[in-house]
Structure formats: C-alpha cells, structure tokens
Image 1: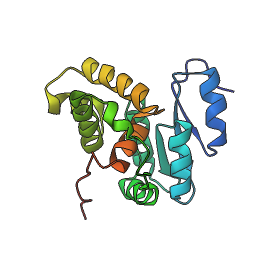
Image 2 (image 1 turned 30 degrees about the vertical axis):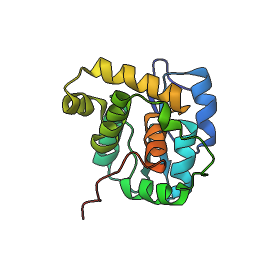
Image 3 (image 1 turned 135 degrees about the vertical axis):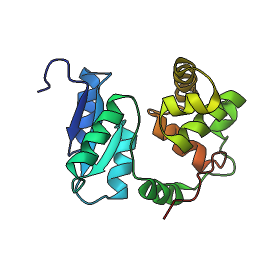
Length: 169
C-alpha cells in the first residue's frame, strides 16, 4: 500500500512496477538490486523504472539517487548499461531504424540526455529551456515507442546514432 502523495518508491522486485504504475501513473520507481545484475537492470528499464541501484550502495548514494529520480532523472550504472548495449547490439538489416523518424533537434536533445544525464543539464548544454527539452522528450518517446528516457537512449545507442564517451577510470 502506498502512502498518499508518494512520488518515489523503492522496490526489490521488478514485477511490482507494472501494478504500481497502473494505479499511480506519475509514480517514479527505483529498483534495489541485490547483485548489480544486467538482467535486473534490463527488466527495470523495460518495466519503466527510473533507477536501479545496488543494495550495497551507501545511504548517501541511495539518498542522491532518490533526489535525482524525484527531479526527473534516470539513474543506472554506466558499466552495466554498456554491457546491456553490447548484448543487445543486434539490429536486423531489414528492420527500419526507429531513430530515422526523429528530427535533427530531437536527436540532439536525446544525445545530450545520453551524455549529461539530466534534463536540466541537457537544456543548459543546448541553450534551450527545460520545458523545451521535456517537450522534445515526450515526442521522442512517442516516436521511438519507448517507455522511458533511458530506453530511448538505449535505442539510439543500439542503432548507432548516439555514441557514449569512454568510461572514466
């Protein structure tokens, strides 16, 4: 049972997300992962979670993730995302590229979101308002049939038109 007015919840089972989001559409969900498993991360993304964090994370890290998710960011470990992209990097040559339907500006917005993470930082980088970024993001999600900002970024990476910078040591 959710507390009235809850905006962010933490779950340890991705199967709960659909039921939670069905009754609370704007609810943001964080998945607590016992072993930093790429499969759990993928299930979290597909279910529409905003974050997936290891249950061994510090209290400060968890508090930061909660704040970022509440602000509208998605938070996933970059090294796990890169493993997922490598694993999912199969696009049939006859399959039309979904990213082809995006405008140039929508591609710029999604690329900025992929490299800086937050919508406000993307707005600053592109010298546009946060509301403009949000409007582009809504259009991107519809065109790519993605359920989250992160899923849209993964589609862009998988299709080869977003390139992430190498991971810092």
